[in-house]
Length: 127
Image 1 (cartoon, rainbow, N blue to C red):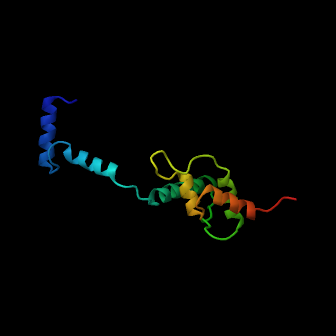
Image 2 (spheres, rainbow, N blue to C red):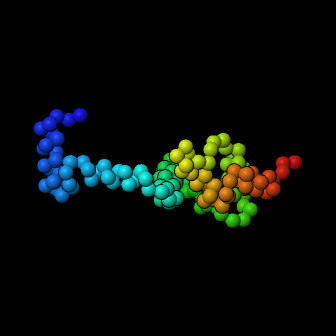
Image 3 (cartoon, helix red, strand yellow):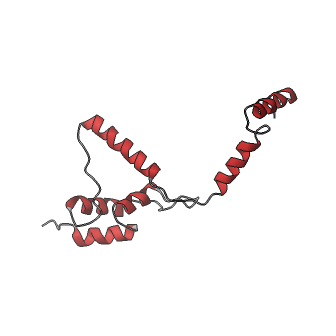
């Protein structure tokens, strides 16, 4: 891929900086990252949620309420009804949970069916 002089120079600078020879260290780290088991951390979800909240506040000037993980408040019922009707998988093709699955979990629902059942039993009937 690279010319011979370029590879030689690259190997020399890597050795000088303490990274080993060439790109071996980076390749080894990439292999370990790919083979590491997936651990569900909420850091990325929280980060995107915080970004969305700050964006909403800057656009409208309003603050969104906190998640409600217990009880039968109107907001929680509304969330359950909205997410019960959402299409889409709960996991990505690589096995990681989707944003939909993470949101349901954060609001205290284990599945779309749980949200649907909660919605059906707690929503107010229109006369």
